[in-house]
Amino acid sequence: MSSEKEEQSESLDSTVRSFIRNLVGELSPLPGFPDVRCDQILRDELGYDSVHQVELTFLLEELFGFDSLVIEEAPFMETVSDLEDFTLDMISQGRARVPSESDIDRVRELVPARSE
Figure 1 (cartoon, helix red, strand yellow):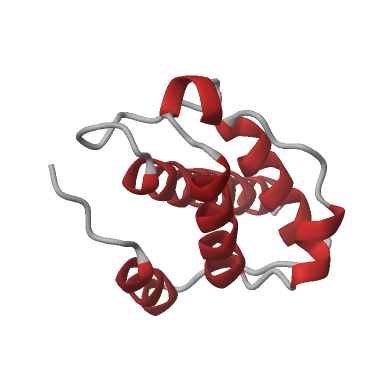
Figure 2 (cartoon, rainbow, N blue to C red):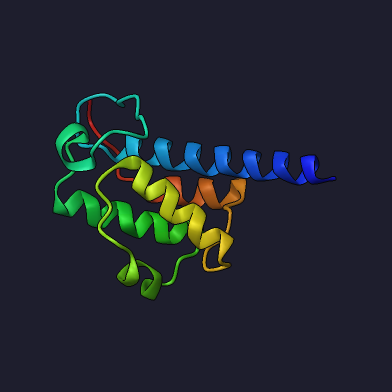
């Protein structure tokens, strides 16, 4: 039974990390849609400036159901992994939720279209 719970936890972990990497890639101001890795620095390697970081924060709030207080309490997040770990921690504390497919579709509609 413990192994089933561990598998569910690993699946949740993988799903959340995948959602975040996809969103970070879609919002990245770099040309094309970069392949996002957990060790990448948002500002230096993925081209995020303060405006793009605010946009990303807003979409993460929408996608994972954070309230603004959670984001205000968040530590400085420099890498993609920082975002992933923070989000998973908030989910484990019950302060965020795992998004459904309809949540993902709804948030994708909020992502500004980019010209390539």
